[in-house]
Length: 218
Image (cartoon, rainbow, N blue to C red; front, side, top):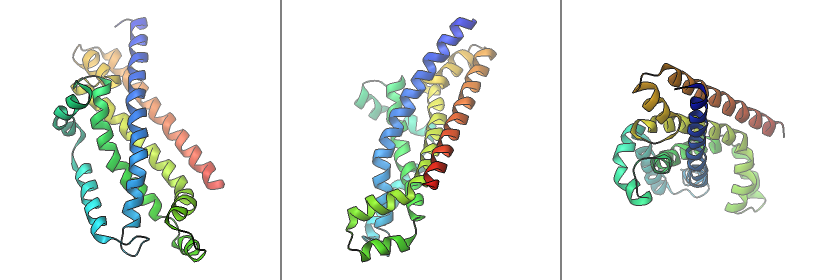
């Protein structure tokens, strides 16, 4: 692949990767954060104290996290076709990426929220705060730096998974690396996609660390 063609292919593949990672990250945060909150609040001796609900939610999350992503891609093919009408391409890859990311971020959110000092929760209860006030004014603000770092881990994980989705025609940098780099024995394409992926991970991690550090200072 020539220089100009390679650059255009890299730009297109990178935009597809951003599309997949961006949407799946957004959905995972919107659904995974409430899941993490429920896991914390329904735990023994916590705000809601529903151990049965906690066990069911924990089992669902553990089941969702137990599938290797490459297997999940294959298993969810019928569901992907049902939802988006196809099993190949960047849009199709959103289904397995999102379903894998929700329980993953749910556990990350749970861990972050559990780090909040219980004394702050008790103080809020003593002041007469209800559940929503405790969640919105104590748990989430206090856990925010850790949640930001968790989101960074989520984005990097989805970036890796989106590259893996290229093995089954998922689009993005992984698809470019496999179709042109591996199958056509083009070392330049393979090397270029690796460089782009490494650079993206470094940038994402740097931004996440920087935001979390500023949140801690506040």
